Length: 329
Ligand SMILES: Nc1nc2c(ncn2[C@@H]2O[C@H](COP(=O)(O)OP(=O)(O)OP(=O)(O)O)[C@@H](O)[C@H]2O)c(=O)[nH]1
Ligand SMILES: [Mg+2]
Image 1 (cartoon, rainbow, N blue to C red):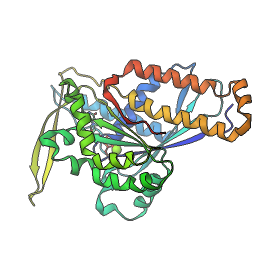
Image 2 (spheres, protein in one colour; image 1 turned 120 degrees about the vertical axis):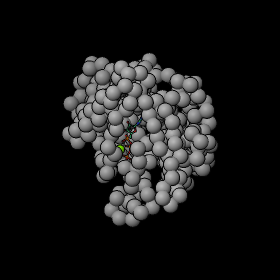
Image 3 (cartoon, rainbow, N blue to C red; image 1 turned 90 degrees about the horizontal axis):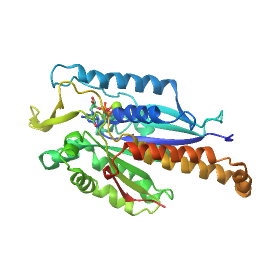
Image 4 (spheres, helix red, strand yellow; image 1 turned 180 degrees about the vertical axis):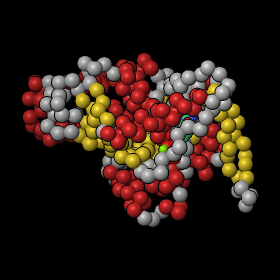
């Protein structure tokens, strides 16, 4: 039985409407459904089940509109949410791992929110996170030569948030760029164009990551709806003449249903790190007695679960939609 539960904190960064909450709800649902009960299971804290359950309902409702129209989806997150999920294996009463996902609303990343209690919380999370998801809105990155990338994806604030951590922390930072709303581009076979655009669009952050060998960077492309594609992105203007993007989406057919693709890939990449870290931390606390742990097979179930999840994810995902930029030591 594990002596204690390893806490693993994940910070979700990205602008308003980038798709953080959608990604969280969908990726857990997909892997949770696939995992074999003999190998292990996820246990959601009450707030997480409530939050994900509602988000999934709102996503399904998007398909209720007539014809190929799409109804409005998730209404947006107003307050930061800490969503905990425990990872259990079959024969252990205590969870091996508690994953704390910090879903930070994109609306709070604006300059007006630079002070106050929420900003203090963000700073604390930036220091305490073991893993970072940077959620990237693909249309802002690609349409009109990426003219809305800076105002929609916040690459400069995000780089500065992580700069200290990457420059001064001996642990560095593990960063996964998850590109959302890519249904249209994947159908058009534009995967490598997206990866190149991410590399260009976040070159400042990537050079900070490259300066810290303990840090890692990966890119993965997901389709959290699967059957809703970008129709067009219009350049609109405010009364002050500021340009902003207006998105139009459509279903791929009248009878389309919610069909997420590749969402187990980011979860696998993150769980790989989390499970390794859990095993390392537990073994570090046993010091010279790890031969006994090995003899008793204390870490076997967790390793077995990791292999099982890797296998599920590899079968369900398209590996060409993952690019590792730096592995991290
Ligand atoms: N087609 C498509 N739509 C997506 C995708 N991801 C998110 N969306 C849509 O984008 C809308 C906003 O997504 P959210 O998950 O609420 O965005 P968020 O990043 O949590 O936004 P805040 O909570 O405001 O920070 C939802 O209504 C989704 O339907 C995707 O991969 N493909
Ligand atoms: Mg949200």
